Length: 123
Image (tube, rainbow, N blue to C red; front, side):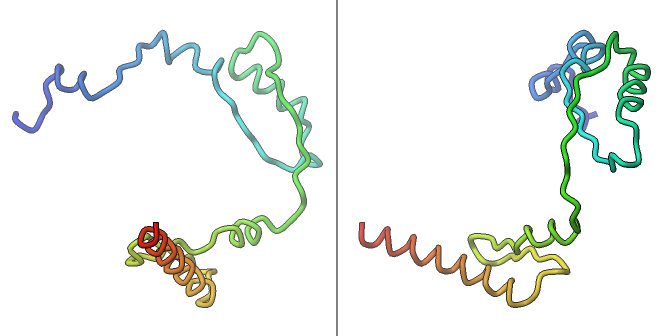
C-alpha cells in the first residue's frame, strides 16, 4: 500500500529504543512529583508503598517541601495573561481574562512591534 511507510523509511524518521535501554531501567532515571496534604498522609508509609510496588531494593530518595496554603486556582489564573501573536491576528484568552487585560496585552504587542520597527529604521 502506498500510504504505508516501508521499514527503511520508518527507521529514517523514528528513534527506536530497545527494551534494554527503556524497559527495565526506566525507573532509575525518573523524577516523580506528588502533591498531597501532609496532615492527611503518612509520608513514610507512602515511601514504603512505592518501594514495594516498584520492587526497589531500598526506599527511594525523597524530600518534603512545604507548599503555601493558598487559592491555587486563583493564583494560577492570575499568572496566565492573555497571549497575542506577533501578527495580532490571534489572541488566546481564558474565561477569567477581563476585557481590560486583553486590551492591555494587545496594546503591549503593538508597542513592541512599533519599537522594533523604529529601531530598524534608525539603526
